[in-house]
Length: 383
Image (cartoon, rainbow, N blue to C red):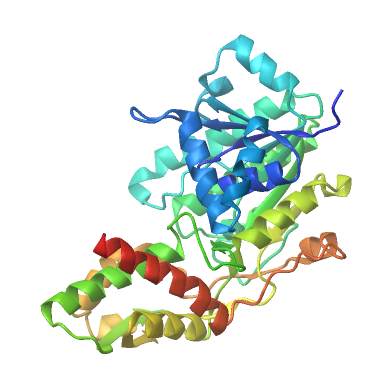
């Protein structure tokens, strides 16, 4: 009998889930993933297509054929009991799973989509936990977010809900899912570890990224606006905008490169002592807003963006351009006004002597990573 570990992964077409599945394949796991197909594309073709992009982002596309024989793709939906899979098929998957990694989630933050967000993120977590509870080892790795902390000064790995307010339904739903997982762990129904990444960005080694949400959507919104301005007033020079951004340059955003996040999760997951614990896959040294926004602005060829207290808009209403930005960037703006300091002592202790270290996200690394993305946007606009 082979000693190869067998992992079941949800969310393998998403950002973290696809990189995790790729990492597990590289670590010699047999990997079964749950995914949904579309009218035009099968679930397997979708997953393989995303994994190819991940491999390419690491300059390892030529290796992917070595791993696909250990990849099984099941078509299903986390929002359904047993993922909508037949009892015969689910029994086979249960029997061939050593550990379950739950990455699938709704990433929407819109209040009007609250019910759907909770259906995916809380009910989905319940269905995945039910699945894990019926595997031989009951081992469950639940991928959450550091922003379950909501609005507070310090976020501890040992806390889930301590009365904090939430900025949006996404944060709240992920917190409620964690409460559910912690309860099931305490009851012995699953053996759970919770992993909490912060703002996950591209690969720090190559600068590349495979999925364009989070801070990348913020950058795309800014890039699109600037492109429209350049078309109206053609110029090859720097555009100057007197554009107020609600937030503080002295606050931070906690950026964690994807290669650090998935390598850290897999290394932690291999440690028996991780059961019952929570880990912040966050940057021990977050990046000041006054560092990353000017660096991105410079790459985009724009100057004049500056942080102001949100109360400033009550004294002087937003101009047309500021109103446009606020409409399209409402979600991202809420994180520019302050985030918690994330305690990551569990993570740092677990990763001692592994060689896995989160790189500082300084201006040179921003130039490398965001510069690649802007080049990608420019190339797409010409194709």
